[in-house]
Amino acid sequence: MNLTLSKKDDFKKILTESKPGLIRLAKELYIEDISDDFFLEIVIPLSFYLNSFNRKNTPYLIGLTGGQGSGKTTLSLFIQQVLEDMFKRKVVGFSIDDIYKTKSERDKIAKKIHPLCSVRGVPGTHDIDLGIRTINNLFKAKPSTITYIPSFSKIQDKHFPKKDWQKYKGRPDFIFFDAWCGGAKPIPKNKWRPPLNKLEKEKDPEQIWAKWSNNELAGEYQSLFNRFDKLIFIQVEKMESVYENRWLQEKTMSKGIKDKKLLKNIMTKNQIKNFVMHYERLTRHILDEMPGQADIVIYRENNLKYSFKKNKNLFN
Image (tube, rainbow, N blue to C red; front, side, top):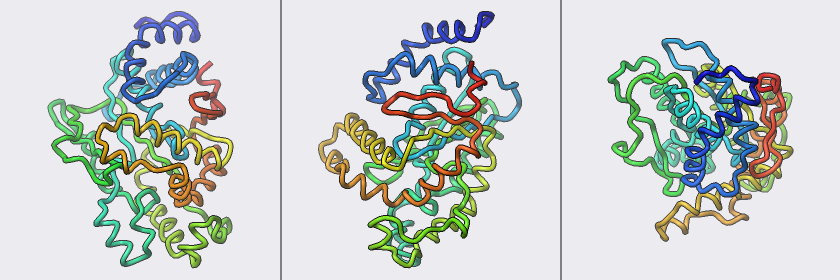
């Protein structure tokens, strides 16, 4: 595409041509009432910016981070769509949710360390080595190389069979990796707080589990996060927004489930609140620290109302 007009006109032109594919993707994701503003003001400017990167022999690794339900995976998928359709760039993406340790692996850790270690989500419950191996395979892939991209069913709490994982051929230009704790640093001792919610007070009063997870974050997770070429942070106003967004995500997820037995695994709003308590300590730390660490900060006001907050000059 020959982009010779002003950026704003370029973005409008890209939206016109890419909109059918974006709307089709939105329907696949069961996202309703999505506005042109979201595409025009966030998705397309980010895609345009990433496409401006010099082509090289190895992929760019782009991290997206933010609280549960903030829209990391959704944003990643829309950007990938535009980069593929409009700029003919080769892209692939996966999530930290796709590299969970198995339930049996987590149960073993729970018996050794603390019962809460069996609950998926916090640092220590992911197979970071699987994520690094996948990224390494994509970095060194030949044109005919097939790389299996991990995929995990949160509803079933297990990986999909490997034969059903995406089979990516060749070496991509961009790898997108989204993670609620992506890029996060461990909580330092001088900022460590006593048990801060009902879950911690009742089930981890001595903070054995919380400190174990923080120590895990200091290990292999940093090896992965340090490889990001760019880190994009979706910021919300407060912790209560994370609870609301995660509840909205659960309702949206339920729309894509046809099996009535699996629908029983969808959490209620109260269950969501209890579940997010597992993440609260590190989430609060991320909300405080990440705006200063991330390369790009996007502020989320509500469902799909986003605006650039840091380095917004890149998109004007």
